[in-house]
Image (cartoon, rainbow, N blue to C red):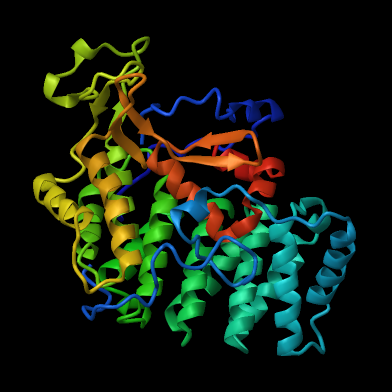
Length: 444
């Protein structure tokens, strides 16, 4: 991976308001649109819980969990209905910046309110011109680490500041303190939060192409060592966070030909983890890498006859409108063995796990296996045949935006970006998606 050089980053140009017409309504959206560790400890357990835990609400401003897939897709937002939040935010900003004489408990309360308000509201105008001072204040709390709660809240406040008002200067200022926390903090929660915010800062904070790839290497080292490289052995939370942020950053990379084999090998080892959250995050990254190893053949630009038949993939059901795919490179040499392992997880019947965890593993790995076998199929691809059309239902994963709007998640890169945004924004995702151009550009 260190020798990998990205061919190109996906564009992040501003999207006009008219682009929001890409949101469709249920009536006009066809359901058959096709798409798409080694254990941190071998002791069976579920310390990280399943993806059904937590929620996408704002009850805990320290959370980076997205909950179940239903929570991820839930479009309900959380907003204040009056303008009193503006004066409240102004007071909290003043309190953050006037740090002298403050107490740990006071900063905890202040940061929590700040995170809540920036999550529930798009407040770019309110923090404009103050971003640098806010970042300095939050980094001071992160470096001093007076309490676990203050540290985690400061890390989350840093992430919310950046996602509200991105700056090309924040990565340079924040990456070293965040990595110091990841490596040296005695708190697993602080390490985990810092990993997530490092991913956020890398994505939105002005990291160069090489820095993005270097951080993917850094995260992969955490994964392959089961947390040992950051003094967190047998701790699934940091490993899960590293897997999730690796996938989030990988969505920026167009050409993974040089790094795909080693990355999938690392993720395949994590499929044996004792923790469902680790297994699922590893599996989603595998699906993403298989998706990236193909490109759509566009009839007006490419001719199928220009490529060997072995490199051209067609939809096995010949569904109308499903494009042929061209294999760009082998994603992984031992695909047969990988499919066997994925199939075992998709049909898991062990009683060592809770019913909730078994369901999460089966559901997620059925999707992952389907995409590895048929890269034309994205997450939540329904193999069932419609009585009306006689065709498979196809990708049915959507995010509902209030009553009428629907965003279709038919590719793994879209799902991993959605999850990355939801980890930071929690229940404020819809409000930011509607008003924050940065968020809309991330999921166009």
